[in-house]
Image (tube, rainbow, N blue to C red; front, side):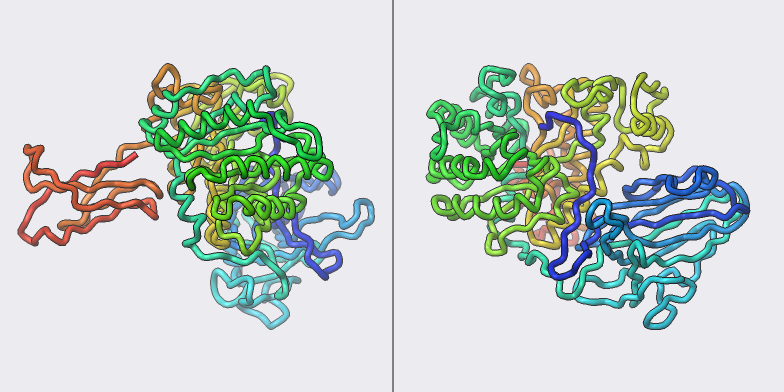
Length: 620
């Protein structure tokens, strides 16, 4: 759970060993500049993918309406596709420049990093674009494009289309002119990824059948026990959890609990930093009752702000706490897992954390050689930080955790601990747009005003309060997971109780659908505090049950073959009967624990002339 509001950040670039003033790009950039004949460029927006679109504020004020600079996040392990649409005021020409980010190697030095981008699969509507895939040309140039370096397939990337890509950077842009017509919308669609030199040292990918993958199948649908042990003692941690909570969780369909714990408040003086018996007793109660109810349990360190603000001064304390936790639970079954640190931020950047995580894992392994360990990147476990995470290559029992609270203005509307302007928000629905436009509160930033304008006007598929706010980021998490063979778990998502009940249910349902699509396990924040699932023994609103645990609908595509959309990790028992109306006639014929979001069963015992009926039972 976040205690302060944050902006979504693009992942920091990684300095390449041996390449002075060069970094791996985490953003791609292209610019549009219209001539005076074409006039202003208007109605600019990303209609596919996430990105920022701004005027070139370094140009003279009179020229800025004729410009756009577009930036969007990219990765080194997959292609990112975006589409941008704009409308020219008049007929004329627009210069398109494919480039890269501007970032000084040393602030004030004037020397910028060389951050190279690979481009491919360009297309355009509303204008003519020759050689969009950079196929025509010589070994050093692409016909119709000025600048840039053609690139064929190599160890780190293969073209999306054809046999060539184009490589650019900020001071090595590729440009061309586009003829535009007054009032005719122009749509530009392009794919990009980071360029890596052939000798780049990347994290070694693992397979897809590791011990971590086995554990991930037991951590698919979880709940956080918030507003309890993560709070400073005797403050706001007033929620009481009982055995009945664990029984209800299992009954509803959850398979694990995440236990946020601020162990550092209960640690003694250096060098031992001995943990109090009292905190262990409280955690023991939660863990043992979760296990007794048939739930797995995740133990973490939560809100260790002294560490995240000054890792160097608190690393030994961090290690000492984990040595004690590891020793305490070494004899517990594999259903108990450890999560090293919740939502690192500030000075605890991902590059700073990488060696600390590695050493923590090494120390835990002394007492827990086979325990699954969860860990996450910095910036509040940001998905955008995944490319900066470096895991020990010999470790195949680590699961990576990320958090997703987008769209933040919806999920945290009215939350007083975020920011003054988000605390003012009320009445934001999911998905947008609203039936009645929202009136912006007074005294808010231009950024929030623009967000509300988009929320009021854009269709659902592009609305900032819709699945468009999180789909591409969760897709990136899935792509990172697939590429590196490391399971990813969404350890927190949720919507605060001040959102209207139906919108909350809509949001949880949309998130669950996308996470099911990408095979990601998840844990809601939270069970019965401010982002609650349960209230007075029932889901609140009641629609949350169907949103998170929808009833499967069987369908048949051929005789004796049935299919059903479900979720990875769910176990289904297929029953068959040759006649309806006879309860005693149903027999189990197949049990499947799903490794994909779809159940498929083919009944070899049904003849071409035969008839059978089927039903599915989900084992919670």
